[in-house]
Image 1: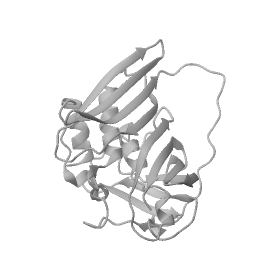
Image 2: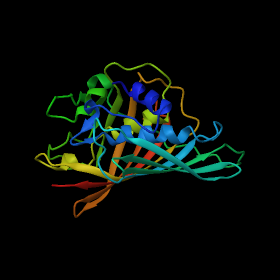
Image 3: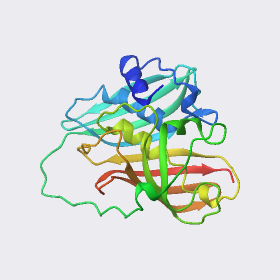
Image 4: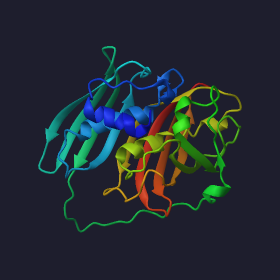
Length: 265
């Protein structure tokens, strides 16, 4: 099932979405997809002129594949310009993901500060792609392509604080304008930046994730490569704190991300 098919499913019937195992990540479903589906359910309850400005996401528990998930939404407050919205993904009667979102209309302001330029990466053609290997890499990676330009691959003993490169959807991709749901999947596709520090396989997962979007979203398509770079700010006692940014291929800022991750190694 394509990413676009699942987005269509949550738009049609948010109270019963079943995600196939091909979107799995170990025993759970890929978190970036879960966040994207919950966002879509929230987006439907907010006026169209209020784009999402930020999301705070907590992965409470694993989302099981092949078991229906209900994406519930509550509008906490609707002010003159900003809507505060909470979303909860519920499976088997248990909350598995919580998302707090702020959606805000544009307003005139004398403040205008441009983002720092994106880092220079090697060209896509000269970067190593992490392949999808059935049984060896997470199942969801059949749908997402990542090519390393900075740092090391997971479990290679690379001690760099930075990790990143190029990312886009792959496989049978529906060509359509890039939106916030796609961005959530593309940003979360990358493994925790702590994993390259390890020399043998060990699990790692995201506890909390905040992401902020530059609006309006750039006029890109789902077939285009984008840039991603993560920086480890601190790691100790099995937890790490990682900041990341996401740009278009020509270096325009799209989103800023921060994650608290757990690592079992």
